[in-house]
Length: 47
Image (cartoon, rainbow, N blue to C red; front, top):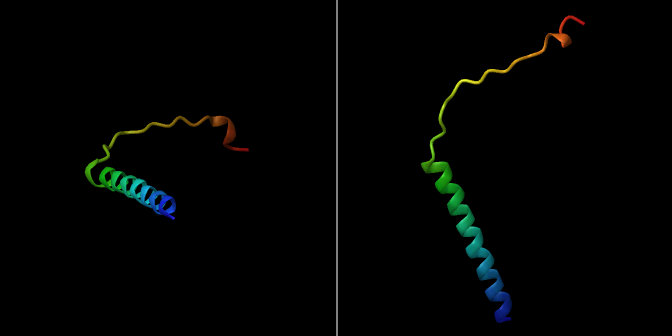
């Protein structure tokens, strides 16, 4: 039974670290705005 407890503890620790990393990225990283230009071919229009 101690190996099962150790496995669950390690999995919970890794899950907590992953959750903390995602939370830190979502909180502290600000996305930058930029212009996007998309060219559309005329071949598909007017059919």
